[in-house]
Figure 1: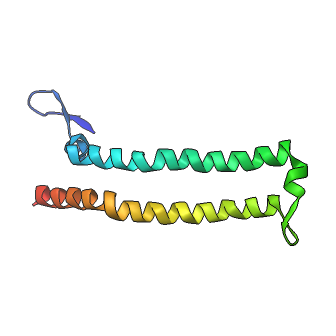
Figure 2: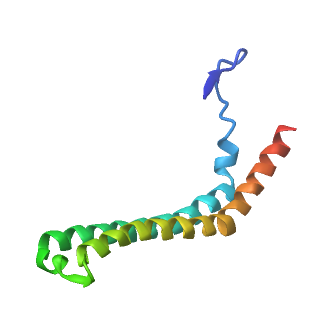
Figure 3: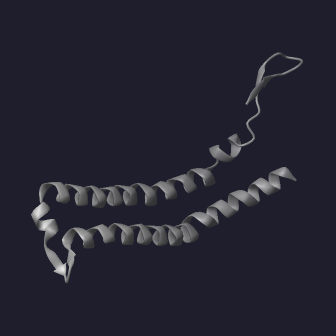
Length: 115
């Protein structure tokens, strides 16, 4: 946000979050977040796309039965759900250990600034 100063007429920036976003703690928080999210997102999308490509390129293989009446396609399809739960669990652990301490520090800093 910006507004004109009454006396000088200059535009004054009044973004209350600017000092926080510019701070080293916030940059470290974003760096750690990206360090986890980008590779995991690429891996998850790769796993999903490989499933789709296998279904299109090798339907005969996908029809093969491997666990009783369950086909390769069925088992790999269920693995998509399993992957979602595993990624969620891993992110939760990662966030608790690597992100929340910095976020808590930023919150404390904001609280001290407001006093």
